[in-house]
Length: 341
Picture 1: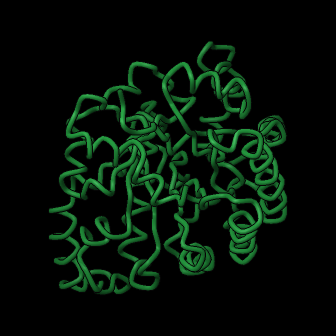
Picture 2: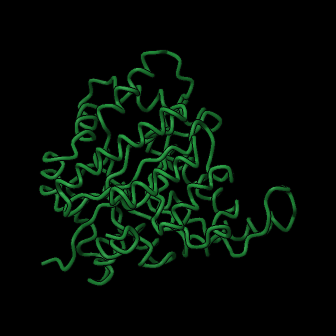
């Protein structure tokens, strides 16, 4: 018998209102973002079984989701607004939609408080309002952190103009989940031309770069207690730690880029001290154990990536790998500590 619960930490949802806004954007013919057109042009228009099932499951944050969890041995979902969330709208719309979404999320959690928890949607388009909404979400609604779906209208969060949000997260002692988005317009074209812009590769390219840019920007020197969670086992960065340390040090020493300043610690130090990774979409024991080895067993958490990768056989993939103590940390204890469950 298991000595732990299974808490899944990167599980997506969406509201009907959000999808209605996405459909209007697609129908308007005015959307310029090729990543949004590729991702949601498929899911909201395709009659394929995959698309229709994903859309249905995203909107179910009640009995249907609980039934799926029961059928696959999941005790709790930590819900986050699916990508790109509110980060494709103008600032006023994004702020309003984030607030309404968080209210709906909190209401759903209240009906199943032992099975569901959630992260607050925020609008980086207005960093001060994003910080306020995070505080309202955490203190007023009981949400456990913030979800950020990578870039916002092509802008990345290493720009200090966005950092009010990170200041709020540090002050509230809650994590920020940096989730993938389709690569920005400046990054996507070679990937899109080859069908590699989505979860198969492009998501990881965009989000791995984003996390590395946050680290090299000095974000964690400014906010040393900030916690960032990244899915898909860290978007490959744990496998690059040696090279990242060496080449960052060499680049700074060469003064090749005036904006790249020395950091107080190595890139790998921030990965081990400020970053947590989840196994979303990566139910592969060798990779999970490698991340546990190089980052620490307290830095790696379980996630399914529901409903995009809803595979019952993957849920128990780690049930016989490693020690009992390591599995308890992986499936339950780390999530409880990081998200304050």
